[in-house]
Image 1 (cartoon, rainbow, N blue to C red):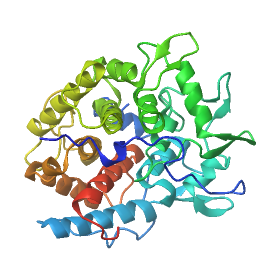
Image 2: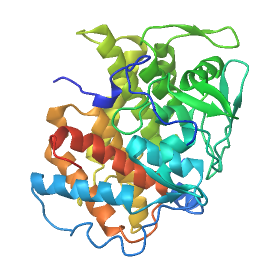
Image 3: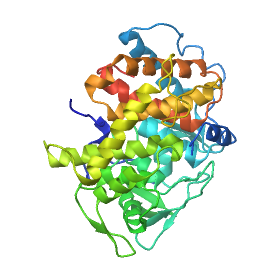
Image 4: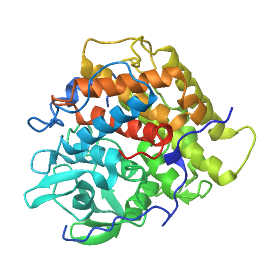
Length: 381
């Protein structure tokens, strides 16, 4: 059986994704992290906005697609982010789910979140500065508004929405013109053995030819396979959001490698390690799936559920996003995945009229959009 590893994981080298065209005017390691992040500004619905999200109940495939469209539209349009209240962490996660479709309220009026960031708009936690090799995005570990992991911003910008951004997309840094390539160049210089490289790998896989080498600032020569091997060997259960992001990066990189290498037999080296880790976690997710279709709140560590609907939403949304990228078309249509999609939609319907932690919300929506793109056909969202 052919493995898929995601339509968005196809390599996108310089210029092959549409650039932003705006003008200058313009870890959930465990369930407990959900509680910690809850102190951050949440993604709340506008007053009276939840009435038409949809009813919970048994659905057929066509009905499921309609329900996906409704919850996606609600997350985009009825949970309006406000630049004066929310931070960069929340906004970038929204851009991951919706790309340049995500609206943002600002003191200057309503715009798109992507244009606001790329054009240098002010936002708490969005801290970029010129670096020795390119542009540095400041890391704020434990922050609920800033970049919490190395290269988290470019990892999500590289895959945002359903198309991602070109590495040559312009970005304003302290009023000076740059491109996303400047952030990537800095990331390549800063990588080190043993350093978390989950989001770095997402950007590398999207923006560099799979076999191209580079030299980090300490003189070490790297390839994407080296980063893949390092991430595949790293801990899953103790990683951010139960390891789902680490797995997503491996999925993207492996798909880019396969696309560049053409038809091939068995994988070797770091690629084989990535394939084994991905396949193992797919099977663990299936085995640990709960009777209602949700996934384990303990992610890939052990089975389990929770009375907390937000814990179930966070775990199910993150795991589903990984599966939507990793599974081929045949496996994506299997009943256990359909049950998971249905449960995830139901969880979003049940929480439509309350504040939801933004990471859980937007990863769930991103996964549903990937799933819908392949399962539901060309009907409008």
